[in-house]
Image 1 (cartoon, rainbow, N blue to C red):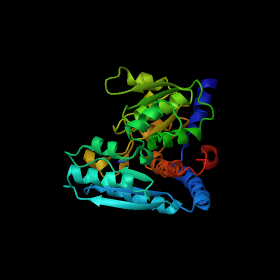
Image 2 (tube, rainbow, N blue to C red):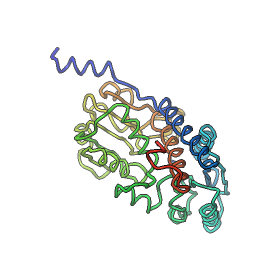
Image 3 (cartoon, helix red, strand yellow):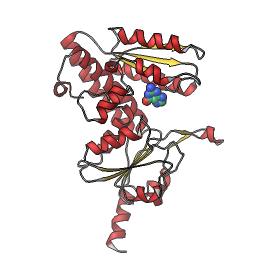
Image 4 (cartoon, helix red, strand yellow):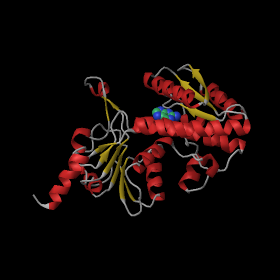
Amino acid sequence: MSSFHKSVRHEIEQSRIIDGVALSHTIDAEVSDAIFRLEQECGQRPHLAVVVVGEDPASHIYVANKVKRCRKVGIESRKIQLAANVSQETLLGAVEELSTDKSVHGILLQLPLPQGMDAREIIHAIDPAKDVDGFHPLNFGRFMAGLDHALAPCTPQGCLRLLQTEISDFQGKDATVIGCSNIVGKPMAELLLQQGCSVTSVHHLSHDIEGKCRAADIIVAAAGAPQLVKASWVKPGAVVIDVGINRLRDLGKKPGIVGDVDFEEVRKVASAITPVPGGVGPLTISYLLVNTVRAFNNQLGVFSDEQLKL
Ligand code: GUN
């Protein structure tokens, strides 16, 4: 066996599963510590309002998890539940009220909204200082321009933190991001650029997606396509982050969840890979908590970023 193949074999045997649950516990402890220090300084705790419209079961599970994680770290939270047939005006009024309520420091509008409602109009009504999702155009623009104090979208921040467990120096690395949504793909590409990577963004119109992935040291898959990324798409030793959450029941299969990566195959080639579930998902909520604490700290002007240590 050539030394190249020996080293590939070695990588295969050493392929790591990046544990998002364990990392989320670490971040939760950092958030708890920051909240403790903030409360000592200003006598208040951050307060998050979560607005959920309708009865979508997946949204209710996500919201319950968010509320539970808030409680765990010491963030106060309230859930505003509105009926599926609520009017756009009523929802807009509820969000405007939360935007002016000084006791609320973060606002999250759970998406998707029921069909026929205009999410964009509601997101624009969230006070940008309280926009813990980082979806308001002012935050998105500030973030894309690399300005300080922008609240950045949570999932890409979580992906970067997962990558940092494997990669200490991003400069000059080649990264391919599959998917170009405003929530994940575009901000992910921007974060990797800020780290010094050369970034390729691919989407459904791209030519040779497979080749563009195979050239990459880092792959972030956020396509919403079950098990799209195959072993032949991955350079031996690459780090693979799987953002996908695809419900098998929706695909007419036995219940369960798969990502956008063919995990069992790709784990034989990658140096490290995130599982689904237990990879990116817990980190998205961690960064919701981080953004809520950052928003609170910015609004009250308690600590500098260095003092906040988040
Ligand atoms: N629905 C699914 N994921 C998310 C998220 O990260 N933020 C919001 N607001 N809604 C979601």
